[in-house]
Image 1 (cartoon, one colour):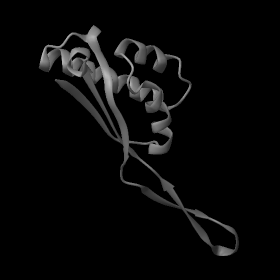
Image 2: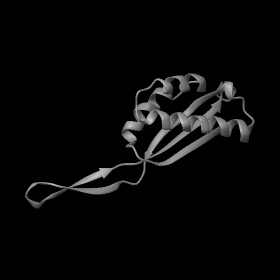
Image 3: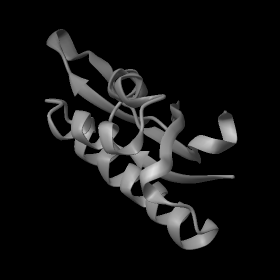
Image 4: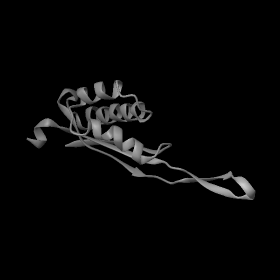
Length: 114
């Protein structure tokens, strides 16, 4: 069995979030939390909070042991893009795209995969 947690409309581009998710994918949960604690990226605290939520879902809803969980899936999809305008020279304007992400983390039991 596996448990999941999602964070939607996170105000950071999926490209930047994926760099942090690649560090924790496939790791046991306790190791993943340590990696996130010492990762110097803006997305790391958000992903750490999301991982804690996925573990809590596994413990509460599926009665799984937190010590035996690992990060089975971790991915960031693109959310809606906020479009803004910046004035430029000679009366022109350029578009600024403020991207958002939908982050999903799935944790599973070690025994299930083996």
